[in-house]
Image (cartoon, rainbow, N blue to C red; front, side, top):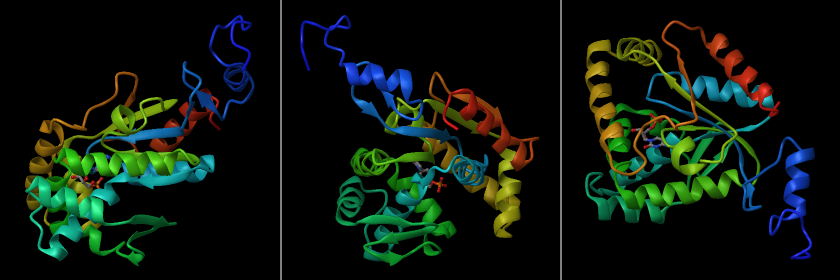
Length: 247
Ligand code: DC
């Protein structure tokens, strides 16, 4: 680049060109190409997975379930006899496995674990391993590596705040604790009171942890899904994406 001749100083021409003419590519103020990610965060049971999957399909983006990655670490800890509460054991487990996705399938070192990672034991252990900074660092690095290669709808707890703070659209989904527990009970056939107790405990861990705590980004659009049908939420998010030139 010809430094000293640009009316924009060191800000590269190609970045300005991208910002003006290609709405599907974004650059930061420093000219670094930013990922194109619709970030959907919120607590368990707020409808993130169903909404993110449907929005990804509508926009032709790839869906990333970041929670599945914490679940993979948890499942491996349980399989290997590592203690999910111990930072060192959980972190070295996280650093020792390769997590990959093939459509809806989630794999650890090439083995399909899509079903095993959904048990209540793994949910509990996932919420424990997600507290450790070393585990989070390994997952965030991997998530950033995945999303920089394409256009994603990524869901989790810290996508808009940590993983992809430059996302052009951040959505924070909420619902009352009662509605969230009832939805989970409807999906799993479990007892709503027990599910509510486990959910309260996981909410407490998710919001209280120091790194990657569950919270809305300052510029996130909050949607309370308690009284909304799935397709209403999907339409709302897809409309927001269209307003921002992403669709
Ligand atoms: O969304 P989920 O229930 O599959 O997530 C499993 C656990 O992983 C949950 O306890 C929260 C944690 N998690 C996280 O800490 N950060 C994310 N981006 C996604 C999930």
